[in-house]
Image (cartoon, rainbow, N blue to C red; front, side, top):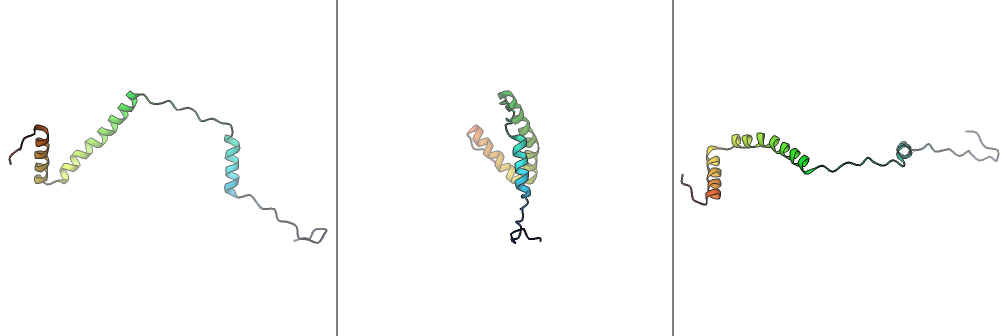
Length: 92
């Protein structure tokens, strides 16, 4: 290092942090920009999407659940469903 005229070491200029520089660049390029408004979906659109999601899971879920159960467990569930629906005891 060279010494300055008064004999003191010259100050080292710190390089900016990469993250700070990136933040500054993004801020400069997006300053004053408003995000585009997103329209609210209609009830029909929401219903259509939710129905599609339900069909996707429903087609897989019930079959996989039934395949993983024993016949006795499926019988118990069927009896419980019949009692709930008809309000009567179902025999074996």
